[in-house]
Image 1 (tube, one colour):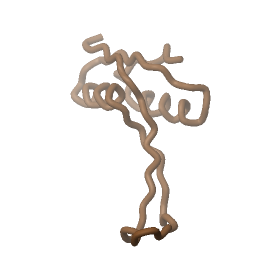
Image 2 (spheres, rainbow, N blue to C red):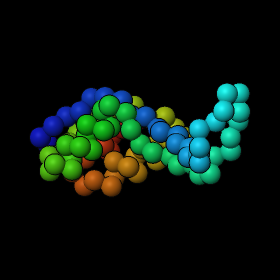
Image 3 (cartoon, rainbow, N blue to C red):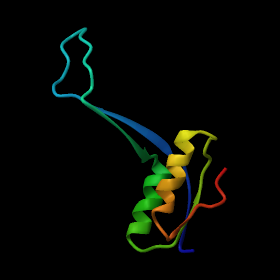
Length: 85
């Protein structure tokens, strides 16, 4: 291991609209995506992309968002995140 990251992970809920709403107006989003983020998570991924072996220490829940976070880390063979809870 080259780097240990102790930090947060977040889930980004991203909606896309065709234009900015007017004051008081509600718009329907044309598309929606879920992304991964958080200071610690972003640092771990950045270090892994630069070739470092990374151990990620963070807390995840027991829900769909946690599954998505774990799958994101598993995309990088040099991030060790198998002991996340």
